[in-house]
Image 1: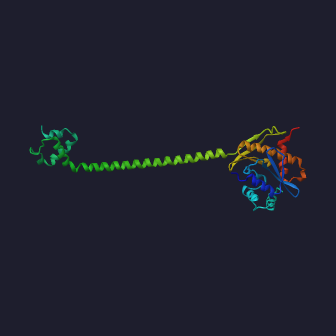
Image 2: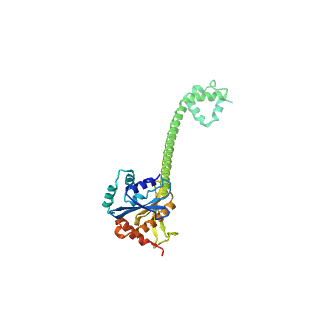
Image 3: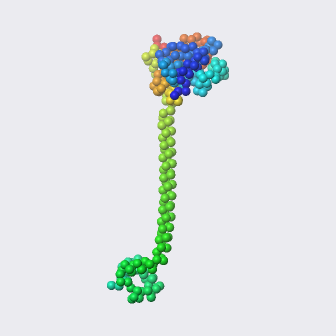
Length: 91
Length: 194
């Protein structure tokens, strides 16, 4: 089973206050803004299966797989994530 | 026919008999001769008892030594072969695993049927991670997942187009460093068909 499921991907999007755009056929694109600027995007696969793999998300939000899971499962906050990507020069 | 003639028929025993005769001539008198050849043989074996078992014991020891040596060699060879078999099996498993998980580079040359075209071929890397294939266009930091390599590449194409649309329709002032870089890379590789 995938590390990051669709269910977790939706939780991450919600936690990061992402705006979901339906621009393509197979994916919704989650856009994450910080201080009015787009800082990251990631695709969420369409489909009813909650276990659809989304292991590509960590790369797109500049985190490792473990931290991405923590982000979706609560221990990591949006502020903590922002601090990480600011340190990396991505915001 | 005397019994000694029966004994003489066996060359090997002759030397023993001659030795016995030299040592104990009194035993080989007329009265000491045997009526039946079988009886003679039995007595000869009885008399020669002292020399034969010693030889057999030596031969036995020699044979046992050789047998032990050969057995040890054989056992060592078997252990060696078993070790090699195990090594081969491990290597085979590693090769299978590497073949299965090794990243594959796929050139993308078209976005058809979408109204986008490839300015220059972009290479994406597809790799297996926890039973999921992940296709990545590292230059633009865009990735997509799929249950198969094909699905992952198709999903990546879809996300590239979606991201390209978003980034090209968003004001540059509203793009952070990451998305800005993504846009620069994507515009180098992708454009909308006119």
